[in-house]
Amino acid sequence: MELNEILKTAVDRGASDVHLSPLTPPIIRFNTRLIELNDTVLEKEELEQMALGILGDKAHRVFMVEGEIDTSYRIEGVGNFRVNIYRHQGMVAIAARIIQTKIPDLEYLGLPVTIASLARYSSGLILITGPTGNGKSTTMASMIDIINSERACHIVTLEDPVEYIHQNKKSYITQREMGIDSKDFAQALRASLRQDPDVIMIGELRDLETISTAITAAETGHLVLATLHTINAAQTVERMIDVFPSTHQQQVRIQLSNCLRAVISQRLLPNITNERMVVATELMICTNAIRNLIREAKYHQIPNAIFTGSQFGMLTMEMSLQYLIDQEMIDAGFQQYEKGDDAPILETLAYGSVPLVKPSRSAFQKQFSL
Image (cartoon, rainbow, N blue to C red; front, side, top):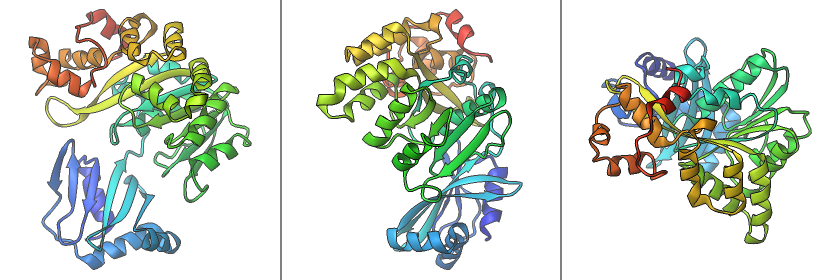
């Protein structure tokens, strides 16, 4: 089978991921389930040719040495793909994440309306967090699109790889891909500060140098959007601090408390019919109370501050889950929440972020536009 044919069929069927391995049929992920796309077994030689076609000669030589490589792939009229090519039992295998060509807006994604206002900050640090494959890149692209539609500014994106292609609207956008346009995030971020940016988007905060430079950029008048693989706001703040040596942590707490604007933590869940994924969200806005908790290293109190801060636009994961239940958007496994036997489910999905108390319906109505 041709690679483009496989990927197009996967897109047409609404898949999120494609897995190609020798001696097995193509496999797609539809919502949370893995399904064989067809019964055509892929041969070893086919996978090798597919990899060469995706990478080109230069990147293919890197792959032959390293044994794995990340890249992006585009099929005109079909879509963009985030691709990892690797070796499996000495043979080439491919994993591709399907990226929608059209940048979805926040309302379509089902995200709280408060997030749109965060994109209108002129400076500071906004973090989007969650496990791999839970829509962080899509949320960040949607926020960049809001800025692009509303403000005349220079936006620099640092990505590995580039996923959504942004067209200049009111903003001028520079999109840089790690491994092609720059060596790594740390080097690209340092360079971006000399490129007259107003907004910097960082695909992932991976190390101390990148985190430190991101904080400095946010402190010096830039709006910085970045992702982390942390699961909630409290863990995110603690991770940002703990990466630094203990002798520097108090100063970093002060810096972070001053420049952090918000933490958006999200989790994708299958909807009630298993036809699509819906997003559950924890949203922490940096109020004075939150800033004080960060300065004083009282991270364990952040969940309660979020719980009591709905008037500022904050939202706990439990509030978000309950809203999805009330709207009959999620069902299986969550109905126990309404019956009171909810602790195991909610602690697993909301990561134990706040006490299990049902919030008022007015809190949902303020946060969601659905």
